[in-house]
Image (cartoon, helix red, strand yellow):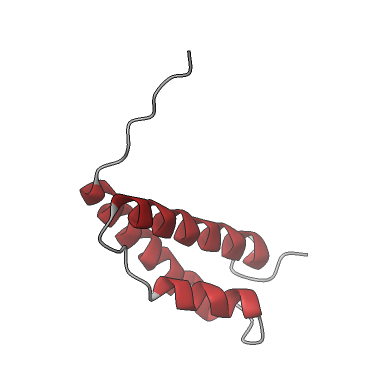
Length: 82
């Protein structure tokens, strides 16, 4: 029998969203202006959590993916990775 997942609390997702938004504010200015992926990340960062738990989970997941992409793309010190 598979273990049941306990859904996160909406309040916890709000906290995660705020933290991810902070990281995006730091990382996005270092991203190449012509990058469509960076533009998509900027647009996603302007979206809210929505009212439902599912939309909040999806939004936090997308913001986390954007942060991960930016970190990989920019490399360790905020410069493009070689």
